[in-house]
Structures are given as C-alpha cells and as structure tokens.
Image 1 (cartoon, helix red, strand yellow):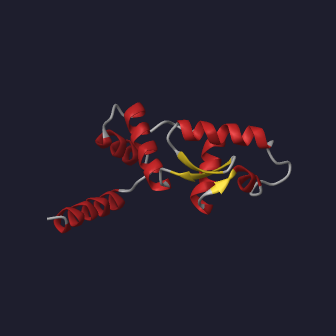
Image 2 (cartoon, rainbow, N blue to C red; image 1 turned 45 degrees about the horizontal axis):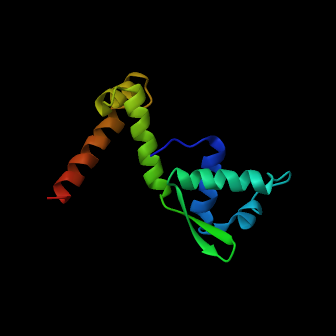
Image 3 (cartoon, one colour; image 1 turned 180 degrees about the vertical axis):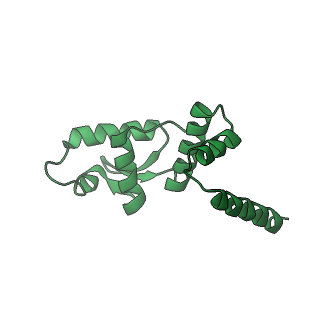
Length: 123
C-alpha cells in the first residue's frame, strides 16, 4: 500500500468517518478557509490512483468511497515502518520499544500472554 501525504490521510479520515461522498460534500467538512474545490478534487483522484478510493458515477458527477479500511491502512503503515527502520524485524521493533522504555516488561509479558491466548483459540 502506498504511503499517504498528510493531506491525503486527512481526506481518507473523512471518508472513513462519513462514508461515500461527492467532492462537494467532502468540502463541507472543512473549516474556513476551505481548500479550493479543484485542489480537493485532484487529491481525491490521486487517492483513487493509489487504490485508496473507488467511485460510482452519477451523471457527470462521481461519488467516491474508501476501498481500504482505516485498520488496513494502519497495519500497512506499521509494516512499512518496521521494514524501513527495523530491517523488517518485528523482534527488533519490540526490542527497541523495551530498550527505550516505551513498553514495560509487565506490558511485554501481557503481550506474550495475549499472543499465546490467541494462538490457543485459533487451534
């Protein structure tokens, strides 16, 4: 999945929250000063090219809708960070969190218990 810019992610969050919308409807969720319609429309079309949005045609207008859930995007983003910064090693990523005290040993134990429990439930 392709990485999104800050503006692209902002638009996707609106689609995830509100569902299918025309660009004109999307514009209504912005505070003043609102982005220009054409700017927003261009970004929406870029999101479609990136495989994030699909559309339905109604006459000469297009209603866009998300093709990827927020959860799917989050997972792919995390995978990209781990690939880029931890040489694709989830073990190195977790070790880094422990070393930097971002996660305690007790939290790590709880994580292991959750994984073991999920593994037992899947059998």
